[in-house]
Length: 443
Ligand code: 5AD
Ligand code: SF4
Image (cartoon, rainbow, N blue to C red):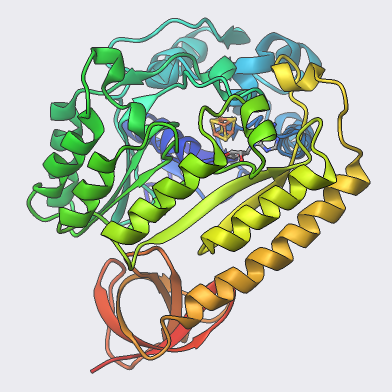
């Protein structure tokens, strides 16, 4: 590392799309000659990429911004940037509230970050950029990937769904798809740099291409990316149960590198609540879709997101969610307490569910799902899985960690030979837990 170089540190919150956006900020800083460092202490630029999906996320971020006041006092020349969804939502307010912030950058200005930062450095004037103005080449700013083998690839930005609980359509704008040729070109270039796993990202990947008037564009894209030379694994998220057609499942079934994992957020099991959420499917239709996945790809894993305590959710509605979780037998479920987001229709709905009721239901749901997760993982016992190595486990250098094609975390003891992240290693599964399986390298 060049000691004279200026440095930056990025603090990321939120979803995979945000992680990808953070890599685009990093790419622009790299191109400006900055060095990334592991902590904000001493950094010349600190960027907080924010999330506002739930109040809990916002609370944490307020705490982090508060913490940075000291840094600004100790090193007044450092530039503190607030970016992402919360910045888009509350930009002006946040700049006023926190004198330590220099730049507030919304979600429509990611690819203009380098220019905005350069302007600030030339003439330091605190500034908010949250206009909902699309940028030419919105997807094409440089990218500084954190991983050496796995690459995020955004295929679309924005969301048109307006689920009644969700803030995303208000902070990320309408759906816009990236050209298929640009996606393929990015992947092919990344392959030459050693990347072999790709995750296609979008708030609703099944809507890919609809803004360009194309039908079945997502399954077409899947077939095209599957054919990119040198690619080992392709994942995608998030699918919307209303929009995911048989064509997508068939593409995954037929594809060589398309991983057998579907993240299919159900959100609730009661038709009344699914409808109040404006999700656009019934519990029956959702189960049919799951049936189709199981028929066409028996080994596929299915994961989901569920919100507990949506306004008006009765005990009976909640039991329908519980039933759904039992019937599907998810590999994993990410469960959330409903959090009212101001500006969304659900925040104004009467009959908000008390926090203690939400918490009790969440606990019950998690215990049902824990049994599912364990059972699904136990079904792998004795099998040999192709695992892509991610690295040493967090806790222990002698334990390696990686994932199956179905996105299960596998841990196993390190052997004496050298290994490289991204390597495919056959591992025999010898023990199962709720969130991971353990094994031994197979010969
Ligand atoms: N409260 C709680 N959870 C939410 N999600 C989205 N909005 C809210 C909210 N207001 C959850 C959904 C979504 C996941 C990313 O976050 O389950 O799929
Ligand atoms: Fe991602 Fe939504 Fe959070 Fe934005 S608000 S970072 S889109 S989860």
